[in-house]
Length: 511
Ligand code: URP
Ligand code: ZN
Ligand code: ZN
Ligand code: ZN
Image 1: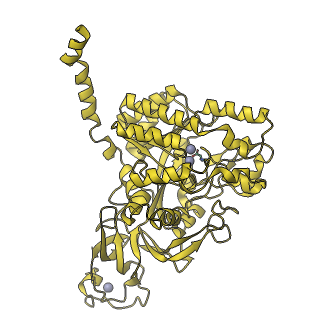
Image 2: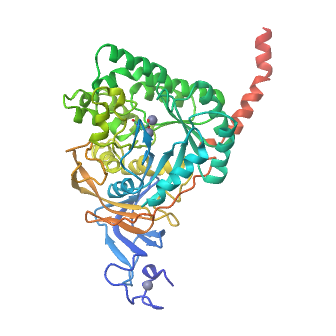
C-alpha cells in the first residue's frame, strides 16, 4: 500500500496531493554508490517514515508523494555518529557554548546524525546528573545517547550505576584520570569502577593523563614564569598520557574487562594500546579530529586569542604525533574517530589570559569531523570509503550496541543518511559554521568532499546549504549493555580460574 515507490505506485490513492518535493515521509535516493562498512554497491535507497525500507538497484518511482534525490556520482552513507561530545557542559567555571540545539544543528550540517554525550553527575549524584542532561536535551534536533562520568565512589554511586544501565539505557561510564580537584578519580575508584562496569556489561572509558603529575607540571611552568597557552602543552607532556593509558590498560587487564580510551592524542598512548591489542586485550582507542590533523605550534602563536583556541586536554601534540595517529587509524590500532566537541568562545577562553590554567579546555569539531576525515584520510588514499564509514559511524554503533539500527544503510535501519559529493570542495571557518562559537580551530581549512544532503530519521535536514532543523525532534537512543566486546569475557574468566589449579602449575612449583 504505502510502499508505492517500489511497486511503481499509482494505486490506492497514491499520486494524489504531495507535489514535487513529496510529503516528507518518503524519500528515494537514486543512482548513488551506497557505502557500508561491510560492502560498497550501486543501489537506490528508499526511506519511509524514518526507516530504510529498501536498498537495491533500480527502485521505480511511480508516485509524486516521494521526494526523489539524485545521487549520481555521489556516495550514500550512514550518518556520522560522534562518540565524544560535551554539549552545554559546566566545566572550568563556565558552560560550553553549544547546547543540544546549536550543537545538533552544527552536527547535521556536517553530516553527523547522532552523538553520545557525557552526563556529568551533580555532586557525584548520577540520577541528578541524568535529570539535568535530560532537560538540556529537550531542545535536541537529532538522535543522541549518553555516557556517564563517575566522579566519586560510594555505595549509592555503585547502585546508581546499575540503575543507569538497567533502567536508563546508559552502557558506558567515563573515569577522568586528570582534572585534579574536580573530576579526577583515584586508582582505587578506577578499580572499583572497572569491576562494577564489568558486572553490568558496561564499557569503562578513561580520560588518560596522570592528573597529579599534570598539577606538578603546571606549577613548574608557573615557577618558570610561563603563563601563556604554550604552558598548557609544556605542563602535560605525552609521557603523562602514556603513563595513565598504560595504567588504565593494566587495571582493565587485571579486572578482565574491556576498556575504551577517549581522545588518544600521542604516540605514547597509542603505543600502549597497540601493545595491549597485540597481547589480545580488548582495548578501544579513539583519536579525535584535532589530534589527527592539528599540531601544537598554534599554542605558541603570539596572539592569545588564536593560541587559546587550541587549548584542550590532553594537549594537541607536536607535529608527527598526528601522522602517527592517522597511520594507527588506517591500520586498525585505533578504531573510531570522535571530536571531543567542547566549545568556548573567545570571551570564555580569555578567562585564562594571564594564566593558562584558567583557559577553559576544549575545541570544536562536531560539524567538521566528517569532512576532515574524508579529506585527510580518504582523499589521500589512507583509508577506503568503507573504512571511512566504519571509523565515522559503524564502529561506534557496534561498540555502543546500537548496530544495525544505527551505523548502516540496511533495510530496517534508521534513515540517518548522508550524501557526499567527492568532487565538491569545502572551506571551514567561524563565519560559515553553525556552532555558536565565534572561533573555529579549523579556520580557513580547505579540502575536498562535501556533504550535500543530511537525512535525520527520514527527514531531509540539510540540503543545498540550507538547514531545516526542529528543536525537540531528536530522540534519546538507549544503549543496551553487553556489546560484542563482552562476548567471551566469561569464558576467559573461567579459563583463568581453571589455570590457577592446573597440574602443570603445581608441577612447576614443586620442581
Ligand atoms: O579539553 C577537553 N578535552 N575538554 C573536554 C573535557 C574532556 O577532557 O574530555
Ligand atoms: Zn503514495
Ligand atoms: Zn577528556
Ligand atoms: Zn571530552
